[in-house]
Amino acid sequence: MTVSTASSIVSSDRNDILEYWDQISTKQEVVSLKVYKQYKKLASDILSPRDNWVFDNNKAHHVIDFIEKYCKHSKGKWGGKPVILELWQKALLSAAFGFIDKNTGLRKYTEVLLIVARKNGKSTLAAAVGLYLQVADGEPGSEVYAVATKKDQAKLIWQEAKRMVRKSPALRKRIKTLVAEMVGIGRYEDTFFKPLGSDSDTLDGLNPHGACLDEIHAWKNKDLYDVIFDGMTARSQPMLFETTTAGTVRALVFDEKYDYASKVIDGLEGFEDERLLPIIYELDDRKEWTDPGCYKKANPGLGTIKDSDKLEDKVRRAKRVPDQLSNLLCKDFNVRDTVAGSWLTFDEANNEATFDMEDMRDCYGIGGNDLGATTDLTFACAIVKKPGSEMLYLIGQGFMPADTIEDRSKEDKVPYDKWAKRGFITLCPGNKVDYRYVTDWYIKMRDEYGIIAYWNGYDSWNSPAWIEDMENRMGYKNKENLLPVIMGAKTLSAPMKELKADLASKLVNYNNNPLMKWALTNVAIETDKNENIRPIKGRNQRQRIDPAVSLLIAYTVLTNHMEDYNALV
Image 1 (cartoon, rainbow, N blue to C red):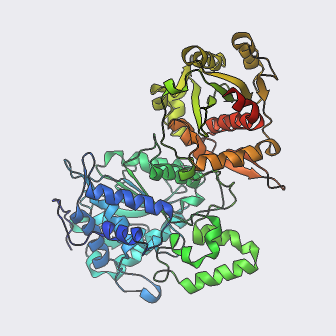
Image 2 (image 1 turned 90 degrees about the vertical axis):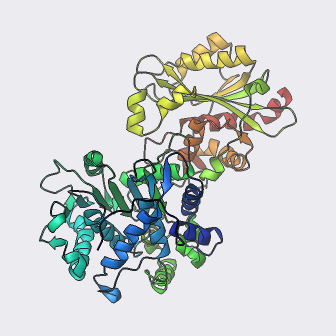
Image 3 (image 1 turned 180 degrees about the vertical axis):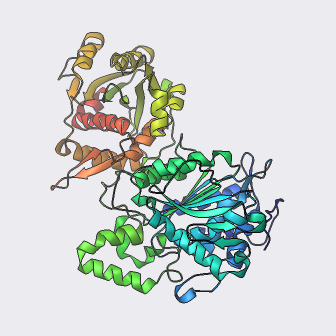
């Protein structure tokens, strides 16, 4: 068994990423929209390398060949037989290990997030990756951990790896299995692979080269993740390999990782992360659970690794017994259950069209404001129409405290600081938002561009001082030009549904403002007994929706005054 890593960039007749992408793009393979987008990008990165990153097929083959030659199944109908990877698994491993820096030869990706439905072989794959990282990745003194919230859960992947070693003569020569860990033999004697949970005896002094994180949907906080992540800083090309299904408990680690990964896949500005490789198999729509043609979107191993007859039987039972549906959706289709539905898909929210502010000169508009808490994000906007056009042009501005923006950027993992430097956010001196800066922005729109928000909507919460300021300095009259918008489903439902249609039809040009785009993708909806909807935050409070709410407020005012506004235009 060779353990040296490949060093040259070569071409090969077998490129698993390109082969998988060909099957996806020609619809031979049914995958989720997120998997489609990710492999389209990966294929492009191979064919048209960017920056210093190139694809080394030798390195991609090295991990695959190691697994298929030396790792064996431990139980079931495949017990004792070699692990033969499927194309989707080979493509994932090729991407994780094959992209390198052409100058240093070090890996691009240091974190892999695989979200896939149960019984698709994720534990077997993670165990094999852990063994590779221990003895075949060329890392001196490699420390590898199987990680979960409880040590007993962490042992599941570790014990699978342990059984693989026991069934492989080649691995037994290099790894010794003990009760609580596996240690290297001979030239690998400084390596080990052990289970680790938050209830382990000590979490100090870790220096991981690799970590296999299991079922993060059950993790209640990021403390253990942070310990592992921080411990990897001394390694030149560490690997976090995370595998999980969806879960029913919201606002914890899984939702944070999922939401962040989704934005990375969508290419949302400010969420570029060249170190994370997210692969998310899931149904694109909750309604697809009754369509057998969609099942592979969440189950790439269906019919081979996972029994399709058993899955179809579960579906039939869920149709008869609704109480079983939640578990089926979460575990077999990766639908995040018990969470408010997303208002927009990324494709509905995304609009890269721009406009020149000079073209908006001397126009009447309709304003919308979500003032928020003084320590938080505030947003103001104006909708503008041009004569003879159905397009709505949105001009908007965020406001945040200058003293806290850097800390908030780190805490929320959102590039507020970068957006402020680009002018999308105005920084208010001190640690609070001064709403007079919002008035200043409307004055600027009026004085510099002749744009006057004739009607200006607002959420009446926390706004009396701002109303007075607008009256004094802009000459508005409350209840005549300044209009409170009740933030309830009865008021917002119809405008919200119409706005969704206009956004999807690309009739709302928000000048490709990344702050607005980010907020639109964060909005969840709450539905009442009459099927009325209103916007709410998801359970992750760091996913702000203030800019989207300000747009909805302005749109609600526009809807209520459409005839009069068209007369002004």
